Amino acid sequence: MRTNTPSDHRIEIAGVTKRFTTPEGTVFTALQDVTMTIEPGQFCAVVGPSGCGKSTTLTMVAGLDTASEGSVTVGGSPVSGISRGTSFMFQHDALLPWKTVLGNVAMGPLFHGTAKKTALADAREWLRVVGLAGFENHHPHQLSGGMRKRVALATALINEPRILLMDEPFGALDVQTKAIMSNELLTLWDQSRPSVIFVTHDLEEAIALADKVVVMSAGPGTVKEVFDIDLPRPRGSVQEIRFGERFGELHEQIWETLRDEVTRAYAQTAGAGPDPEGAAA
Image 1 (cartoon, rainbow, N blue to C red):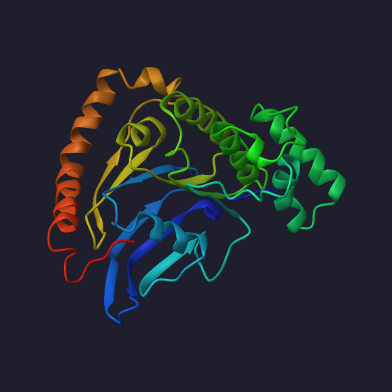
Image 2: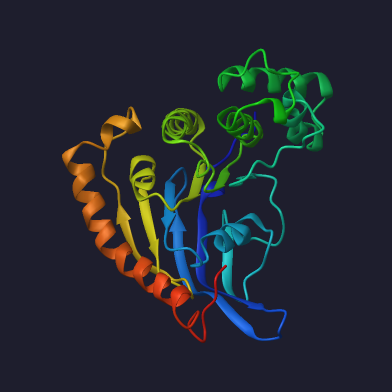
């Protein structure tokens, strides 16, 4: 098992601006001077209207894209490519359809040079942890949406990531399955405490899971406000904590900030389009 030092887990995004060139040759700014820090072992949720650059931020932390201006560092080192210590869980299943469930989960360790026997044994154990023992030889199309998300979670966590990036991973699930997956995520995260950036459109989900919630503005996206979530851990069932008094207070405070950005983003898309310097991303 890999041993990480606390500094391995710190994510620092400093003054990041990201511009894209459109097929028409014009320049759109997706992110404008974004600055945020995720401390070692911290669970950070990022919320904001569609098109504010939440997913773009994740791709730069993952090393899948680069900033036009500013810097992104992990553990004090600039992100210059895909990092071995980072796992990414996408909104849509990133499972290989021709591989079995076991083959998908074992793929990461095998790519990292783990012996096949060890990788398969570890994959079987992770499938047991996420409640899928007995489904090792199934293929993704033979599973429900919630079961595929469990496979994706095992695929991300088997690599013992120091950084876990999650782009609306439960957005397509029904309410009941989403709650179950949220509970499982918190339980598994608490065992190894990777630093997490969790992108979501669901404010309740953000508050229930995170140590802090970052609210981003309508495009071009920037950090509008950061809220510390002082709900005690372990949180328990996410279905139950939503009815607590403090949860309601936090929801009201954050929604006051988020609502203006959602309204502004809607006006941009329903009216004359994005701001001259802004873009959806």
